[in-house]
Image (tube, rainbow, N blue to C red):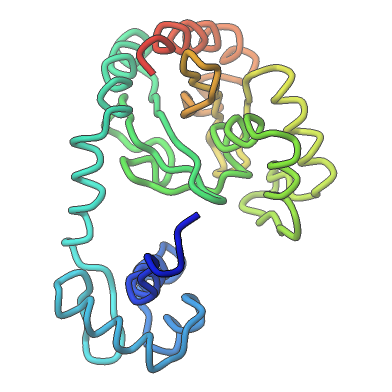
Length: 251
């Protein structure tokens, strides 16, 4: 826990404003940014103008949107972080073996973030690119990472949370979702079928280090017309489990 004297509130507010931009709200004015960041409109306006002056936002004078400069953060992370560099060769090998698309993700709050991927250059599922953020509750990787939490930590994550319905197949009932996570915890893998996006099956396993801590999740995605979930479990689950076993000493 940071000491109050060491906490710079201005930076925290500026980051909150920057994080207010997402796929749902790609353009914000001061009023919308204030609502999303939980600060006053005057403060939001100052932060928006400062971020635009620094080149992280673009503006037409009323609305603001992210500028390419924000990619410096993700680009630097993906280029220098140890975890993506360790995992990438394994993803490349599996993609070459199977012609399927593989990803590695980490949990960030209520979303998962893709930190490495390999496979077809044709985008199979919407948003399956490096740095993409996807809802944890509706993805195979998110469920694997949530299952890795202690029961107390998972209960805290669920407290007061409304699970968004993304497709007709998304599990949104809290009781059913808790049961689903309990099942994932027991099976140590997860299959999610068309819950995040129609026409996409996903299979995920946890990536653990030598201390037994889950540091990421590894998954494969496929189209239903190509592979059904049972075929994925039979042919691709052993591949993912073996990859996770091989990576464990490196993590």
